[in-house]
Length: 138
Ligand SMILES: [Zn+2]
Image (cartoon, rainbow, N blue to C red; front, side, top):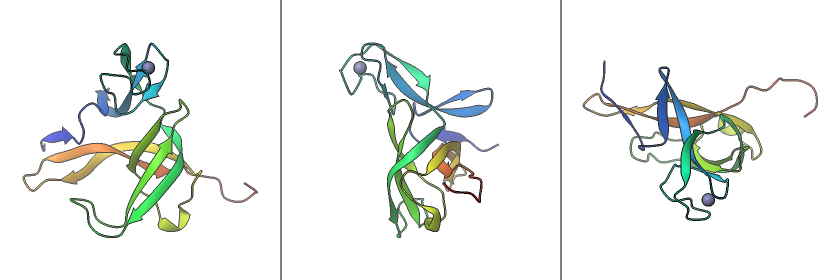
């Protein structure tokens, strides 16, 4: 088995063999932030706990990069995703460019983002469109 590392420590926790995207819930002001950091970005309290984030969110904004960036191959879609708990997460969106639109529902997935030359697999999160039923008015 290849060596595996997490792209950004603290963004994912492993539970029952699956990776879960984690945020920080502040016990002082009640707001949730991502990534989990020691001090709440809203009220500077250090009284928080790591919590799993919602797995489905809405695209607030996105942009498409058409040149390679590091290990990523174009087109690279960077997006801000709004989660129900009020947290805005930046991440990669894996979707067809034709279907991109603000307000679309997306879900988080975790897995290998790329493999280093020494075989190390770099794990992280990304978003994919939520399957929608075709036909009918939306
Ligand atoms: Zn706070």
